Image (cartoon, rainbow, N blue to C red):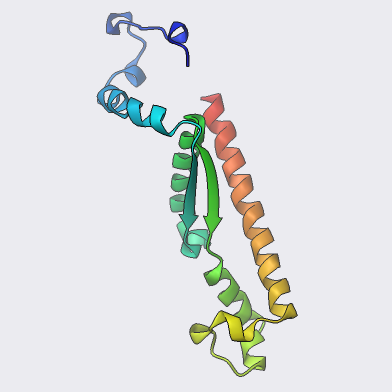
Length: 145
């Protein structure tokens, strides 16, 4: 951001309570870090537990923080663990019962076959769609503020 684009407004102008408070020192202190990580790629890993319905507010809070990073010039990469979703789906489909395996002690490699790969792809697609739509909605909301 070129310096000529910045405008310094004295507090006497009274732009409202949203421009006062304790956030300004924090913002100024974080400016070097914002500059340091601009145009960098950051990888964010989500545990699968964030994707169940009970943790939707926690997931939304994390994604809001990532949207803020994106607005500050970071290029986010989201990596989502699907282990919980895949195990739940395997239980629901009785996949491991057919193979005489306990889902809770499931080792991935020995039990992989074409049917399980199809199931994992379906879970990955559904999760990707869910995360992308939430991220997009939060991005639009952040830009309109």
